[in-house]
Image: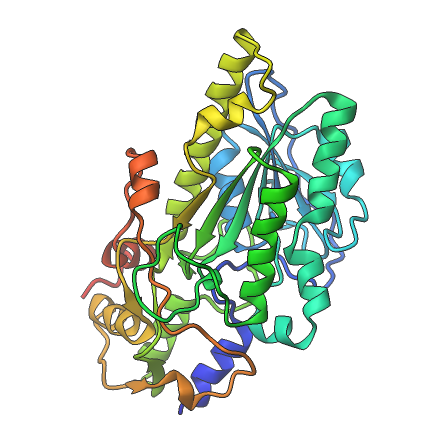
Length: 370
């Protein structure tokens, strides 16, 4: 087994490259540009906004919405982002209520997580304190009581809530995670169903891939870029042939989040124009389901993805070596096949088109087509 793959797995996350508790402090002040305060712009708070997905969401939403984001250590300092930064510890709640009551979000997108499975196994209590958003829900309830704002919470979950015993998981299938990370994310979903009913949408994201982040580096390897680098150097690296995911292009998640916000905003406006006794009517009218699989259109293994990178970039595939997941001791159990059905999302959001892996590679490496 190549030590290169082991090094990648130790550093990389299974799905979303999100803000982590273990991030290194930065000394620079957060970059910010004053945004328009138009009443027509929905106020969106992105927790973990300095992480990989969070940065893409800021870039995708800032033109049409008023944006704020939370960070713990890694504020965005590279250049202006048109977003208001708040330093928040989501595990303890420090700074959270102040941020929520000051910004008064109408929508919150929760990207923050401790999503390295090995770290979750080592300290489950620290894992669940961040991954189960009980402090965030408390803050949003306080916002409703003090400001009368009934905010929608879009929560980024994971495909690892499924046990991986077969392919093609649907949202209605039983959830039985095989590792601590998956258990914490399932507990988060259950917490939202109990404490924030009709006011949330869960997106069960698969392995996320895409270009380099748009605002600043996240300090950890991105999977397809890692593969391309290894192949360009001719370094033999092993890739699993027996683990399958519905790898999702990062911009597809952004498009889904944009659409959910649009649907919610339209339903909220309609509810305001015709008030009813059902306080949660605007949330119920926005989407028929509260949980959606958020994956790509294909069932892929890491070996499949590595071969596709080699083909697209014109590299020899001789350095790609097949491996079984059992050959690597990772310190946690990893589900074998958590490929997902996407019919529910596509039926409820017919304007969404999921990006095939080959198209994603063409966008990431436009100058390296074979």
